Image (cartoon, rainbow, N blue to C red; front, side):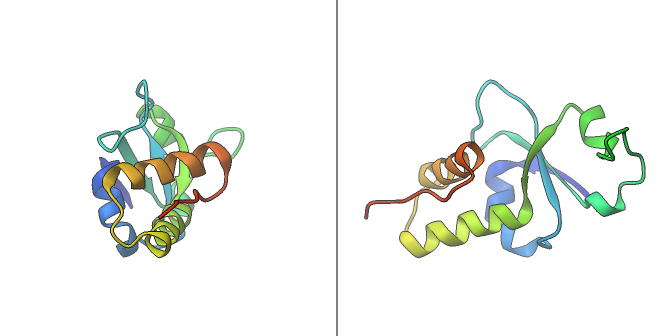
Length: 108
């Protein structure tokens, strides 16, 4: 499986993806909801580099981002804290997790 979309679309459909998939991001200046995302099934990728990483994402210009399981957990955690979260809050939660490997705490 290989799916290219943007972060907003991926996060709106994140619960429909299998948890074992992996997300790569196209390195723009800053991550936003329109940032390009590539979702792949790492196990299905046959072409590998010397570190056993899939070649396809890097060849397309993407860099490693988060697992689909991480993105599902980020959205679930935010939803528990604030059921009516905004897109900006979702982006903040994703960025916080990406930068700190920890869930964001929302003061509601």
